[in-house]
Length: 636
Ligand SMILES: Nc1ncnc2c1ncn2[C@@H]1O[C@H](COP(=O)(O)OP(=O)(O)OP(=O)(O)O)[C@@H](O)[C@H]1O
Image (cartoon, rainbow, N blue to C red; front, side, top):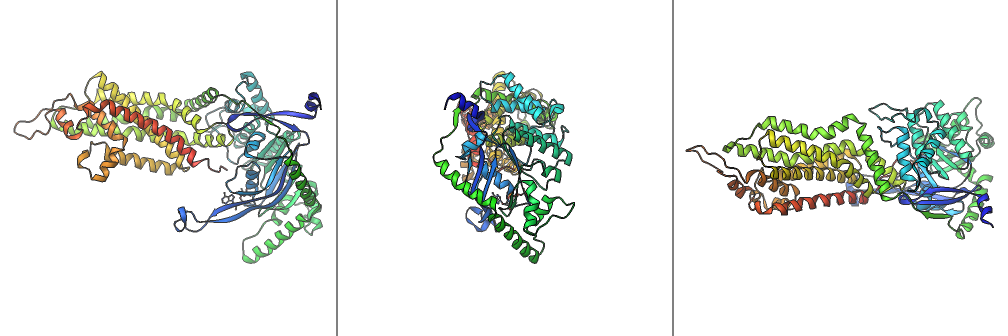
C-alpha cells in the first residue's frame, strides 16, 4: 500500500503518553474497543482491622464477571445500573487504572490495551472536578495544554486548540471567568463539569471515558452536555459514559446502552431495541414510563427484606442468563475469539515522540501555582503575614530584652519560639495551600503528565520567595523590637536559620500529605511531631545532659537541636549580664550560660549549619519519596 493510501484510509491522531511523551496512533475509521470476557475482583476490607495481618482484614469481592462488549468508533455508549453495580469499575478496568485483579482483556483496534496504550489513546473524566478555583477557564485549559501537548507546540497552536475545545463544549461565554470553588463563587457546576471534560479533550483522545458527567446537573444542562458529547463521538471517537437514570430524551441520544447489575449485563444494545427486548421476556414497559428507569429497576436487587432480596436476585439471575443466551451476546463471544486471534499478530501502531521538556513542565506548574495564589487574596496575605504577625505577639509578650539575670529566662523563651514557630507556621500554610494542588497533581499524574519530582520542585520554587520574605520580616522584628544582640553577621545567620527551619517545616508537612491521603490526619501527625521534637531537642527547656538516656539519642538525630545551638550561640556569646549584689548570680556572661546549655557551640557553628542544610535536603527527598511510596489513591 502507498503511503498516500494509508493516509487516506486512516486518520492520524496525536496523543501524549506516559510522562508526557507524545505518541501517534493510526486510528482506523472502523476502530473499536472490544471487551472480551472481562472480570474484576477486589479485596474488600472486612471485620475489625486489629484482627488481621498488617491491620487489614480483607475478603475477595467479584465486581465484574465475564463481560463481553463492543464499542464502535463514532458512537456514544451509556453504562447504566443501580448504585454499586460496577459502572465505575468497568471504566477503571477499561482505562487500566485498577488496584484489583483483572481477568479477560480489552482490545483497542485489535491491540491489547495496556496502561501505556490507554494513557495515550484514552482520556478519563472522573466524577469529581479537580480544578484550581482561582484560575480562569481559558487559563486552566491553556496551562493543561502546555503540560499535555509536545514541547514544540507553538503558543498560537495551543491557543487555537484551547479555543477549539472551548467552542466544542459551549464554554465561550465563560472562557474568561474565574472557575471558583466552594467558598468563592465562580462558574456554575455544569460549566465546571464541562471544563473538566474540555481538559481531557485537549489531547484529541480516540476514546473518552466519563464517570457520571451529568451528576448534579439540571436536566437541561445534562441534555446539552450529552448532546455535545454525542456530536464529538460522531466526529470519530469512542465515548463511553456512566449515567444515573437518564431522562428519556437523553436516553435516546445514545447509540448504545448497557445495563449492569452486580457486575453482569442484563442488556446491551441500541436504545430503541430495549423495549422490544424486555417485552419479549415478559417485562413490558408501562405506557408513559421512561423505559430506562423501568429496566434499571428490573435489573436491581431490592434489599429491603430477605424475601424481596431473594425474589429480585432470582429475577436478575434470569435476566443475566437470558442476555447471555441472546443473539447479541453470542455474536460478541464470536467476535472476542476473533479479536484474540488477531491481537496475537497485531503490530503496535504507536510511535513514541517527545512530550513537553523539563523546563516547559516546571515553568507551567510554577506559573499556575503563582497565578492561583496571587488571585486568592486571603491565602496570599496569610502566606506573607501569618509568620510576621505571630512575632508581634512574642514582642508584646516579652518586650525589650534587658541584661539582668531575668533577661536570660526571657531570651530562652524568645529563642524557643524562634526555633519552634517557623515549622508550625509552615505547617499551617501548607495545610491551607497544598491539599488542592495535591489533588490536581494526583489527577494529572494519573494522566501521565508529570511526576512528583516536578511537583515538588515547582512548589519549592513557588514557595521559596514567600518563605524568605516572611522569615526576614519575622527575624527583623525579633532583632530590632526585642533588642536581640545587635550585629549584622549574627542577624544574617539568624535569618538563614529561621528560613531553613521554615522551609524544612514545609517539606515535612508535604511529606505528611504524601504519606496520609487524609489531610486532617497529616496535619495532626506532623503538628505533634514538630511539637515533640522542638520540646525535647531545642535545649532551651531542658539541657541535653539532664534528659533521660533514651531522649538524648532522639535529640542527637533531631534537627531543632542543631538550629537551637546556632541561634543560642549567636545570641549569648558576646553578652554580659548584671548581677545584684548579695544575690546569687547564675550567669555573669553569655559564655558561662553557653558552657552549661550548649557546650562547644562556638566551635560548631559551621558544622551545625551544614547539618541543618543537610536535613532540609533530606526532607525534600523524603517528601518526594513519601508520594512515590504511598502512590496515587484511586480517585473518584
Ligand atoms: N477497590 C475496591 N475496594 C473495595 N470494593 C470495591 C473496590 N472497587 C469497587 N468496589 C466495590 O464494587 C462495587 C461496584 O463499585 P462501583 O464503584 O464500580 O459501582 P458503581 O456502579 O459505579 O456505583 P455508583 O453508581 O454508586 O458510583 C461496589 O460495591 C464497591 O464497593
